[in-house]
Length: 572
Image (cartoon, rainbow, N blue to C red; front, side, top):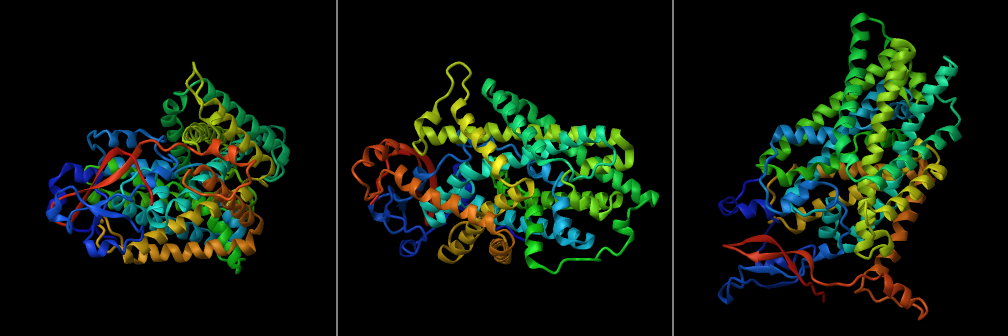
């Protein structure tokens, strides 16, 4: 099992140390080996202690970060302003479980079984996806407690690899992952809504008989409705989020209850009465596509470390919260899939992106199908609303900081909503809906893009283990955990070349497109540009006044303590 690292008495004695502890027990001769190649200057403790007190004046990568997570929740705000830590293990478990249970479990089972081609292999794929997500969550927890900076993976990538890789992650998230994810959610919502009306017209319609134009049109209407809501008011998403979350959990529990009821009554479908391994695929690329859909359903594990800053005892509570929540989610997802197969035959599940509706219709008739469809559609609409709310704020913040034209950073004078940013995100989402190739293709694209950076992030953890062995780690996972994660992630990233080449090329294009944007928006980069382009580039480059950052303050002994302060940064 992962373990909690011992902490020094010095770190326990200071409440600020618990809040801002960054990490690093460096001797002066070890510091030059730092992966970040930080500039070292004598600390403010006095000239007589220059070898022990060190200040990382070069540790200013936060100036290069887009505010990718700072606007997403109030936890970061309260942490920065020193409020009480009031989240215990139970709260942490609830938050992490709530992040992971989404629309994926009501739409992805069909994709998984369609690729694995057998019930047994499909269930194994769900277990493997959950375990892989578990190793990722455990690795991110170590990074979160060692590098307690806002930004999640973006901050860890900057710490390990520098600002360019970090910027490319933020760029890909804003330009592709956020609108692409919104497109997937809206397509799920649209398919459930369309299934309601098409089943009113015909009871025997096949799950894949609904024309794509109807699904895409409904999805676009949903996106436009959410855009109008987010433009008109800024509080609806926060107020309704609890209701939408409860609907998702209730729907999932109902699916599991129906499956258990069928098991008890002995009325099982042929999916479980026949050999569950019949027809299992032998293609590695097919299993990679199945894992993509499973991993997308478990998505949310990477944000578990955001809970750490508000926990009373993060070194003890983070591993408990992560391991408990992951065990709960894996169990729920596997039981939900068993329930689908207990009621529906394998072929029906494989064709459907709306398995919850099909399960409800098979057991309770039209009323049951309509009930599940309404519950899932409403929860998807709520998730779309929340994602649009947060995504538009990221675009707005990027516009204010100069990463995008300032036009996108403007707020409406009376409504105080980022209408321009909402319009940009809505336009990108509509484009993904129209040309993205549908639900299953978009899921492949999103997973390949996100897991490329997850791989680099956890690889950074392994590198830091070697380069900075004295980095203080309040929580330290077994080394086999990140190694396993990286090995499987590398396999998943190589497979798209065979299984999903178009999606892989699209991801590569999006990421590479961020490279010129990085150099254009960074003032300290010297680009050999033609004279007619120089004024245009200068308008996009942000000014560099005093900005928020982290500086190290010399403390007793070898401890290095981080205080948040406003400081002007300079680069060599």
